[in-house]
Image (cartoon, rainbow, N blue to C red; front, side, top):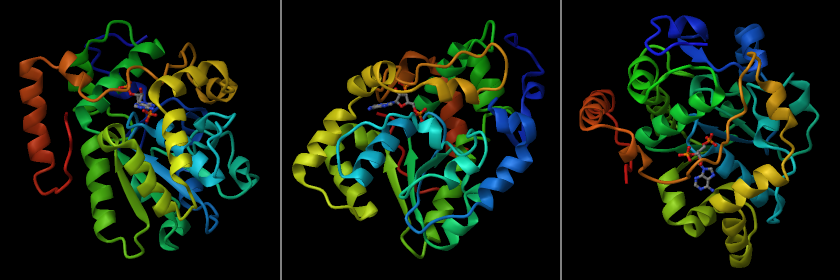
Length: 299
Ligand code: A3P
């Protein structure tokens, strides 16, 4: 178990390309191999990649994308981890899937499948304000049982804003995506703000359908929005989804599978940040994002 204040937190992770990696079997076994397999994977023209920093609402948008691609508001039996590129047991899993494949990953833009990027394959990128991301990630790590006595300040100092941030920092991830969007000559990246999806789910789902070039009706959009509401997804996650895959992908002993559907709100950060922590965060945010035009919504 890791202890709060443990100076070696960063040494307990597998590190690759400057990123501290979560304990998924393929990453723990040979991270370089899995990163390269993904970057070099064979892609199809109609693949869709959902790319998001961890805890940005990936499960939510993945379910919406699956329904839009199917043209029916039916839940996928499998969890999104079944098509989670860094955690699938081996790449043959995705090779054998029928098209269109709703793949998903937390890998940064520079490690996305090269062929997909070069061919202008569709990428759905989700961005969520980093204070809520931090809170969500903190709770996931707490639930995992990996840490004994781990407070929010320790988490921010040593992980989220510190040296051991899973998959690298939020700032780096989002600045890389912003740059990619600027150079996106195909219009192949569609960015969804978590907060916009929360405030205007019909409008955002309509825009997503347009981007995916799928036929929809207003009834279908309304049905998808309803079926993918927080309460319904939370319910379906425990009553309908096959969770066995998720348990298999986690490689370190004793880690509990976290409850993904925790609160699903904008602004829960206000319940976790003290005034001092908030000021510290704002200073770092200002510095890290000084050349960025991303409109982050904290409320
Ligand atoms: P919280 O921990 O703040 O509740 P990811 O899927 O990338 O791991 O992100 C998980 C976060 O998305 C969790 O945030 C989860 O509750 C939230 N989420 C999942 N489905 C949602 C929905 N339908 N509406 C709003 N938030 C949702």
